Amino acid sequence: MPTKNLFKLLVFCVLTSVVAPSLIAQSGTVTVHQDERIAELMALKTTLQKNNKLTDGYTLQLYYGNLNKANTTLKEYRNKYTTWPASIEYETPNYKVWVGNFHSRLEADRALMEVQNNFPSAFILKPGKNKKDSKKEE
Image 1 (cartoon, helix red, strand yellow):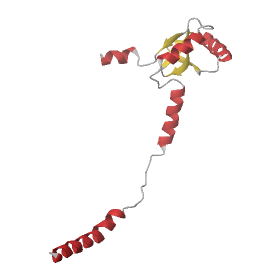
Image 2 (image 1 turned 45 degrees about the vertical axis):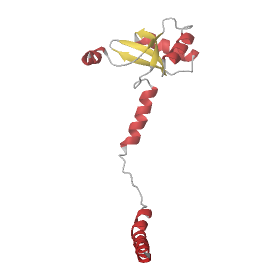
Image 3 (image 1 turned 180 degrees about the vertical axis):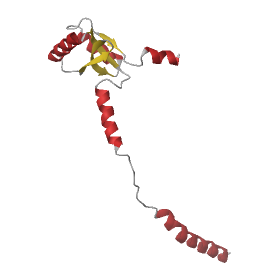
């Protein structure tokens, strides 16, 4: 009996001295090779999101028509409000003045209530796919 226990102890010591250091001492370094253009693309994405080009949210449309009136509307908006960004978007043959990039309908509704005091024709718009794209999915 005692030799059996001694043998087990000896086997245990041998295995732990051989196997354990390899399990414990697994350290190393990780090197990540990343394309240099990723930082540039992330900056571009951020810019596009700020300018309402990539959005799943809502925006307000203040004006739809010719360029001169769109510029006038944009200047008038920027003189009265600084809370939300505004831009002019072109859709043949007209120009649109868009305001804000709201993540929820509630945010857009609150902004609309404030903006409609000076721009009564303003309405909430959910930019998205054009009509041709939505027909393909149906």
